[in-house]
Length: 149
Image (cartoon, rainbow, N blue to C red; front, side, top):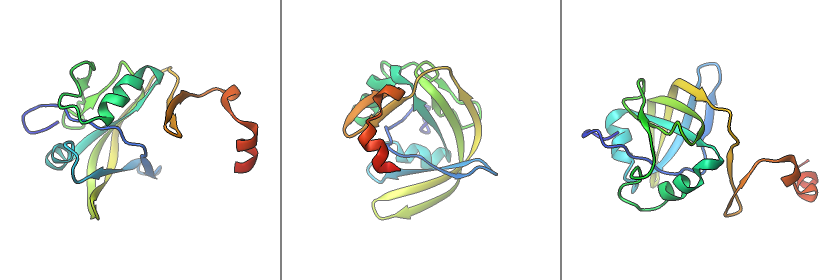
């Protein structure tokens, strides 16, 4: 949320677990992102891990649209300064409070303590090789799997 109570968000292709003992995550935000000032001022954010029903939202949040929440229902986090929680289309979410911010090149890295979570009984939205997909054991290419082993 920004200082005026407006939600901000973006699609990230990576979130990194930092510690399980003291649950924490790392996100990377480009200096040109319109979400950056909201995270900097609130020192909090939410990571919404999307379910398959969140594909359209993922595409909108990856765009330069000015009101990314126009067609996406959300509720404010009670523990992460009102950060938007996409409870209708999330597989899970993590409500985070920033503990450290590191400027690296054209990005900021935020290391944050996970203060709240929820998990919903849905299928995960996946993104691979420029396309969206869903998890199914039948989707695994045997040649790719043997190359990973």
